[in-house]
Image (tube, rainbow over all chains, first blue to last red; front, side, top):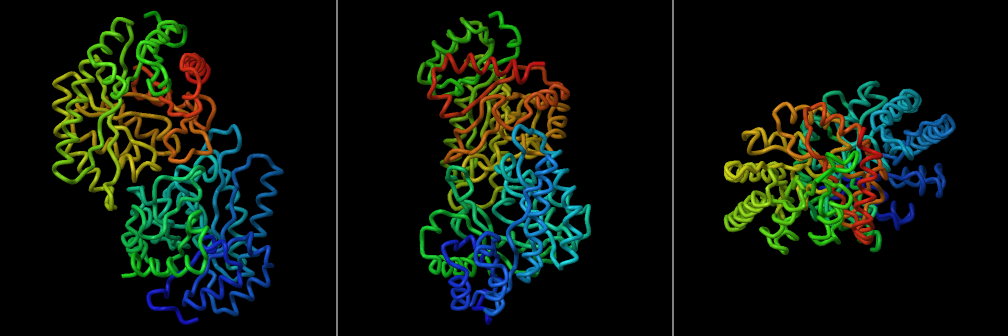
Length: 280
Length: 280
């Protein structure tokens, strides 16, 4: 794969163009000179993990991440065992796809639970099990802080500082963090935490989305196209680079309006926005 | 006013029962033994500031706060002058109503602006003008951090730490903070910041709402009734009390479902929830 000008570090997360099948996605990447893709477990499993791995390998694409494992906050033994089993499977899938990074979304508060700290400790307990298993397979876990608006129902890890407090209990080759502008752009402590993450080699993926308002109901599918919102994307890119990150930059947009359009067109637009708003 | 059992520190913010007129609100408070109200500028001005002041005074109610001034992030000279004039008026109204606390919501990013730090500095510039004016009239400004999901369009001050960084540039008798569980419950640094605020006498109001999901479109009107969500309300009450706060506790719920119901019924329910979930 010869990347198009300005796109040598560009990766499109599959969810940005969720309407495309995996063959359509790899074909569109080849035509546009997009060298990286971030994949999601559900469509990969529906297509077949081995078949998907062959498809992206034959297309010369780098699989920058697999999204996602996690949801590790349940308190009951049966639920915890099921969550660990599912994450072991996710690690196996990541290894089969040839990516070195599995993104983890921690999970929210169990019903009736109001103890965020306790839930984060259960995530740490799970990382102690999953980290060595992942490292043995060449996969690193990337704990992703999600925006605080998701703290109750999706992710009890809300800041890079919290994600690093978890990750630093383990070797960097086992556990690091995902830095996603959508989730951290508001946080005046995030720049120093990016430096902290970089210093120990824990920036395992860098993802971009812009922040646009008004947020839609449920707030999950309102991530803005690059350049449409309030995030100074280039400034965040410079921060992760100053911290030593030289890897792919993945664009992950959950956006109903984008999903309603043709995925090839959205991919071309997103690549163009990347060159306009991110590349120096 | 003789407060009902358990309600001696309870204050209902007018927005919780926005369907009630001011006379209906004061009447409902008298019947239920609710000793405090937090008022909003728009309905007070519509009723007449002097008339509203007489109404609450005759009812024996304490006006715990006036909501709200602020929106101080504009960069243009004309817009900044207009914002300052509006806040001077808000301070005058607070003094006329006999409350010692004006809540300030800082304002969001101007269109096309991506510099949160710069916007917060413009808030500081405005506080330097407004603080002395307020103190001369017996009014304290309470900078309210809003949940980070409002950082772009409503309030560039997202954490108690940021609010205190602003407030501490001025005397505590001029500028303090509003502590509202809805906005800070996710923040693991908030407990230490409450202690910091208390140590300098800057907890100018303590407000409660619970966090419920899914969030509605626009995310403004989804604050949960006490006990319905993920916030350990009593734990937060204990933290502000440990920091020295002994004042009223105001319940402020922006909630379309509550607004669709009879305000007297909602007030009675809210007072009951306060006793159940907050009072020791």
